[in-house]
Amino acid sequence: MINSLQGPAPVKIMASPGSKTALQMNALVYHGPGKKAWEKKPKPSILEPTDALVKISKTTICGTDLHILKGDVPEVTEGRILGHEGVGIIEETGSAVTEFKKGDRVLISCISSCGKCTYCKKGMYSHCEKGGWILGHLIDGTQAEYVRIPFADNSLYHVPKNADEEALVMLSDILPTAFECGVLNGQVKPGDTVAIVGAGPIGLAALITAQFYTPAEIILIDIDDNRLEVAKALGATHSINSTKEDAIVKIMRLTENKGVDVAIEAVGIPATFEFCQSIIGAGGHIANVGVHGKSVNLHLETLWSKNITITTRLVDTVTTPMLLKTVVSKKLDPAKLITHRFSLENILVAYDAFQNAATEKTLKVILTNE
Image 1 (cartoon, rainbow, N blue to C red):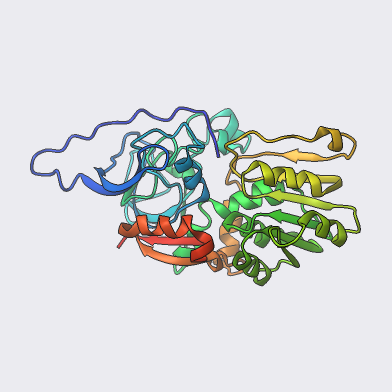
Image 2 (cartoon, one colour):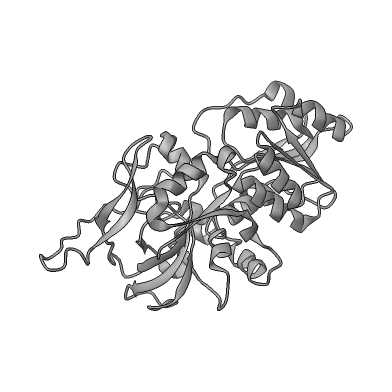
């Protein structure tokens, strides 16, 4: 998710001598490529009438956070609090917030939407002229004890009574991202053969939501046997470890040399995007979901005559209300993607587990602010 929009300028919060502790919080702070720290930061406050201040209950780590730490998202500047997912409790609201009040439990969207600009009126919340993907990107994010949420009425969702908060954290980003950027953009249809390249959390979320449309086959490709086993348990009809067999040859054999109808790229590196170009069939869709920090080769010499559609997209979260209903009704269970749980203060340990997913068998982690 890359957005060139400039967010609000940082504001310094001055504490009186007797209230310094009250105005401090702990947060995960980015200090340049490869550098992060769990440290004290000023507690955020209401800056605009449309803001809400949320005390984080649960948050998580995203693959995009790892891209930031690699230096793939240069808009993220030193000192930024990372994170764009979570659930929490409203601590304070601005004077213009009408849908939420102190004490409400809320789901935080990874996308902030003013609801009024040209892009918001088109449903392209990701390109909101004043918002979009700004949390943990252009403004401080959710891997902290507190977070300021701009445009709260359009960027938060009420958490239903007795809902599983851990499952709802998956609705902040990975479920709508996989569904909108992968499944909807890929135009998955009944009877399709779908290949999902990358069995990480986003790829597995695409696998779960693709089944809304009853494709005939869903093929998961990854280099991690554990993740491929999880994919099979979640409904994949075939799994391929591309380090142990020729994945292109196997897919062509499975499809009688026709290629797949939909290829969802859920990794974000040149090799996986090129792989999708190699397996797509005539009339097929390549739906890019991964965050790409390097250029890739587009093989028009082979694709020009195949009626191929290639799509890119930032998640707009327009499907979050529908996905929320399916999770609350237990028609969809994204909690199956959670493998590790930590207290928020142990976030550095959680990052180690997330970054070493192959050895730790990590998918999504849940961080609880206790």
